[in-house]
Length: 80
Image 1 (cartoon, rainbow, N blue to C red):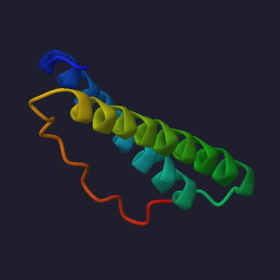
Image 2 (cartoon, one colour; image 1 turned 30 degrees about the vertical axis):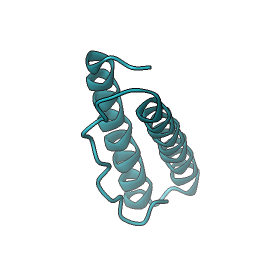
Image 3 (spheres, rainbow, N blue to C red; image 1 turned 60 degrees about the vertical axis):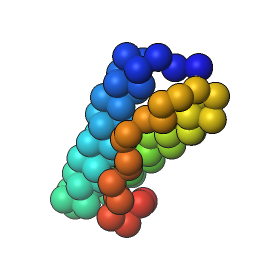
Image 4 (tube, rainbow, N blue to C red; image 1 turned 180 degrees about the horizontal axis):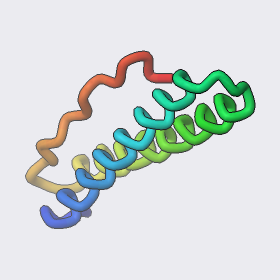
């Protein structure tokens, strides 16, 4: 069960993970060095995994408490 304050904190974390994943993905596409591309792609995937885990926690919390969280995940282009 989440309090409203906890939901707000999780929403912030969701935003930060989404932004980090997008940036890492962009950096992987910008570089020409295959080693750096691999590292940045790995970092992007790790942040995407964190994002998915946070969203799963929010969904589980919504099933257990009211009111539901108002955050809606914006679509991520390409969803690596």
